[in-house]
Image 1 (spheres, helix red, strand yellow):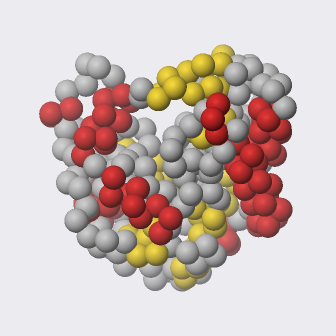
Image 2 (tube, helix red, strand yellow; image 1 turned 45 degrees about the vertical axis):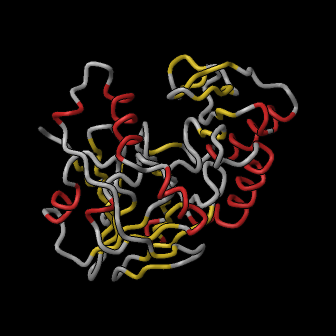
Amino acid sequence: MEYFKVETISPSIKSITDLTTVRSFLIEGEKAAVLVDTGTGVGHLAEFVKAITAKPLTVLCTHAHPDHMGAVEEFGEVYLNEEDFEMAMTRCGMDRRREYAGFILGEKADLDSLYFVPERTRGYQKLSPDMEFDLGGVTVKALAFPGHTQGMMVILIKEERSVILGDACNRRVFLFSEESSTVAEYRKACYEFQAAYGDLFDILYMSHGPLTLDYSLIQNMIDTCDDILAGKDDRIEIDFMGERAYLAKKEVSPGTREDGKIGNIAYALHKL
């Protein structure tokens, strides 16, 4: 069973895609390495990473959802924004991860034949906004981008002028769960993030779907929020793993907008 695929995407960054098509990112400097997210926890991720790098490793989690924190039990030092600490204990358990894997792999998937990493029994280090990690010639910086969750963080690789957005901003941002912001709050977060950090990066890396997206993504999200708040969006009802939401813009396929722009929002009517 091939649980992971690795691809070198820059001089210091490798993407690791797990069986459920979620990406983690391994960033290496001259003296240390950082792993951003740990996927759904299907397969022995720690063993796979150790075969790639022998450098001291720190794990940074962008947020506390099961498809990004699934393998954290295999690692010692794991950083997470404390806003998501409680959610890490309640939303990333084995049942939820198996449910997600089944949803992605399909009804015919034999989940019992797959190895799932056990639930984490240890705590987390606090990942604070603007915290930096010196890897030796490569500097990684955590930036706050609340919305999808309140503790949502993105990771800037300063020397390469690139940013790992996680689920903070992508082709389909989910704002319908209990832990998500309202559309108005998310619009504010997008605007503030772009104003504060937009001149620090040129490349956007995604955890789901295409590896990269165009820089226009964040401004498109602001514009989409404006349409939702003005009642000018398409408001298409969708269901995701039993949760009902409304998609702002029509799509020709999941994540691909009919109007050709990138970036969509799935939201709840009570969270405008």
